[in-house]
Length: 260
Image (cartoon, rainbow, N blue to C red):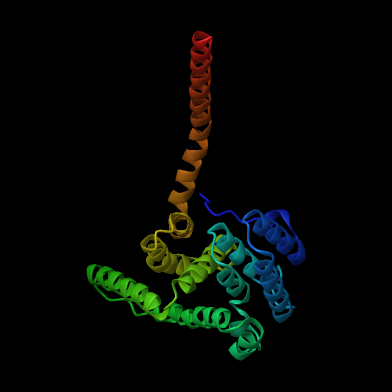
C-alpha cells in the first residue's frame, strides 16, 4: 500500500526528476520566489553529491529529490522542502553548516543541522538482548518509547521530524537494495520508532506505508500471502464496485425520467 507516491519512476535523470517536481509545485501554488529557493537548493545539493551513488547504483541526488517529493505531497512549507534537498550534505560531504547559513539563511541551515543530529538515534537502538523473552520485550518497548521521546526532544521544530520521516520512508521504499540483515534491522527500527512517530503526529499516510513496508521485511512470508490474497480479491472487489455504480446510474436515470 503506497499513500504518498513518488514521481521518480517516470524520470531517469536528476534534472528531469527535479523539473517534474517544480511542475508539481506550480500546481500546488507555491510562489516564484519559493521555486527559486528550491532551484538553488537543488543545484547546491546536486553539486555537493556529485559522483556519489546509492546501493541501487543510481546517483545519490535522486534520494533527496524523492524526500522533497514526499514533503510536497504533504504540503510542507518551502523551508522544509529546501532543507530536505540539503539534508545529507553536511553528513556526507565536506559542506559545513556555516556554508548553508551563508547561502540559505539560518532557518534552512538549522533544519538541516537538526536532521543531521537525529542520525545518532540509530546508534542508540543497538543494545544487548536480555535472556528473558518477556523482559526483553518490555525493555524493547521502553527503549522504543524513550527513543521516540528523544527524537521529539531533539527536534525543537516539528518540521525536522517531518523531514526525517520522509527520509526514512524513501529509504524503506528502496530497502530491497540492502543486504538482508540490514533490511531487517532498518525495518525493525522503522516499526518501533518511526511509524509510531508518524502516528502520534497524525500523518496517517506515512504511518500506514511505514508499517506496511516494515512488515514486508520483518515477515516476508506472511506479507506475500496477504498480498497474494488481496490481489486475488481485487477482481471481485472491482466487479462489485462496477455493479454498484451501474445500479446507482440506473436509479439516477429513473429519478430524472420521473422529474421530467
